[in-house]
Length: 189
Image 1: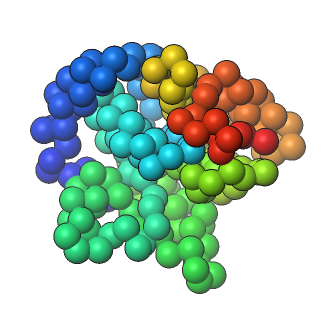
Image 2 (image 1 turned 120 degrees about the horizontal axis):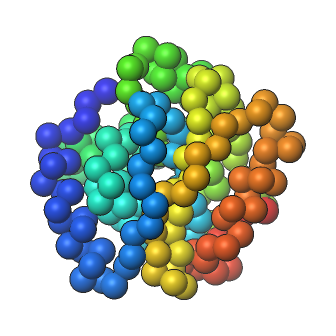
């Protein structure tokens, strides 16, 4: 997968933009070659912008999945350079299996996923990120955003045990401390 030729230009811009807007970056990128990076909470289109800023601030060579409808002219080339992978969720595509295979083939791969799967209020997170990490035998790293305190960053590394019923409450308990832009849609039930 292409890491993009524009990324180095955005590294300095991200640090500057976060500073000008009064946001603080917390944490650091773990020294791991392959992992799934959670982006949560996801309650606004602005979350995408802020998560790109944190990815560039920490110089994380990540890829992210987005609705295939986003990848149209004139933005298709730019979004792919920024690490975007178009995903068609309308068919019976097995995204988890496809991404697991990409992890197995790659020496270095970081995939960013918003577990809510949407900006709208959801009663339950999608679990594809968990299954992808478990099947690929890679850890999950917690990426977070907190609009209330204007903090964005990288949190702890979590290794899935294979017991999703035990692991999901642990993952969600970490995110309980953060507030999304739209409080009514930032729940992580």
